[in-house]
Image 1: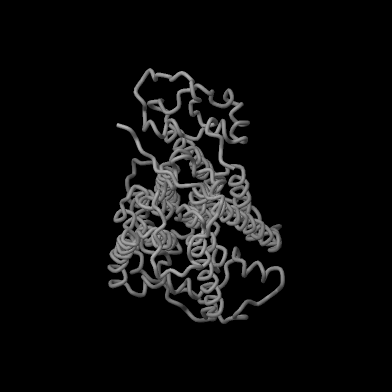
Image 2 (image 1 turned 90 degrees about the vertical axis):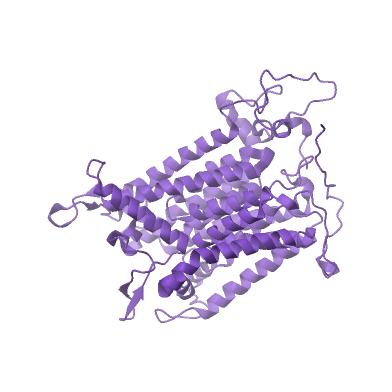
Length: 538
């Protein structure tokens, strides 16, 4: 059901108008229509009792000059990022563990698993030969492939992520060379430099999410204060991608298709998932006859991706291709649904037992086909829904479908879903429940990696937690699809608001091309509210 307008502070007829003692701090429309969670959300209303209860009916909303919602949300993000750093800090503890009492990282007693502080950034400093000052993609080394043969290896990350690691290494070495600065192991300095940059990237993600939320700006507090931030903000380099992805969506919402393409292209050069967002944009632009704008964004994104990748690909082709080689040859990761089935049934997989280094071609094909079906399904929903879906709703469905069908779901990938989920389905209790479940998967994961012989947990404890997480993500998808076909229940659509992140799609009427068959056109529904266009008087 649609929310009661009076719950948002809209004046009743005949009620005296309040004259602000100071100029309005932000756009009058957003101040009058801003969602106030203390009034509209039971969870927030209960929690607000700690600080005096929900905001009053006659409170002046949107006039505070300094402590604005954006600043409050960013402050919350800083607090949770600090908690995330402290959660990883045990893994950069130093002790005289080397030869002749030389200082080294103290991972004795499997500290990285027992303290649950594991972060890829720490072992990668040596594994990627960054400790040698090597340039990624140029430097190579040999490793035992597991079959008695040596294999040449290179940096395994996309270009932007690889160059970010190289830049952080250069800063860490420069810091270490200055003797009057506080000293530590280079790997510890490197981790802190990486963490500082990732924290800034996540703050950009929060900032962009808050702006994309429109009148529901406080929804972004769940992006800032997600339990997944504590667990995974510094597990890997994924906040770089989320910053580019949400920044690209923000640029699109501000009707800047070129900038949107640049940011999505850079995001695709950090992790490939931001480029997936071009898919929902395409089907929505087809539905509204705005494909020219999509073409600008898509061509800019591809050009940006090529501009970043081509120099490395031409100079160091084998190093550049390592990311693609590794991902084609790796099997099903522990978090994937394919491994869950293997864990409980003993199934050997689509390809059976493969020699080391041989690509699981059937698994790759199955994963690709399943994701293609997800794309078809999302496109069908986008084109046939009675009212055009919001952009972030489709983006969440597509990215969630990608993770569920992919053979790899690294734990930090869940960060990809956080801003999209908050913008797509702003039901705080539901989202907080999913985020908590997803974050808690880290506990059986670490205990499983510890090993049963070392008082760890059997694999099935971990894979059971993965099943619960996947069910939670599927449930979110079902709820979003339900609201797409019942737009009157969508809390974001309210009054004059259609799609805050839609950009040129916002308020746009359907204008499907003539070649689109009847079965791919919107279905009539009595539940679809009429679209409204907001106008201001002079």
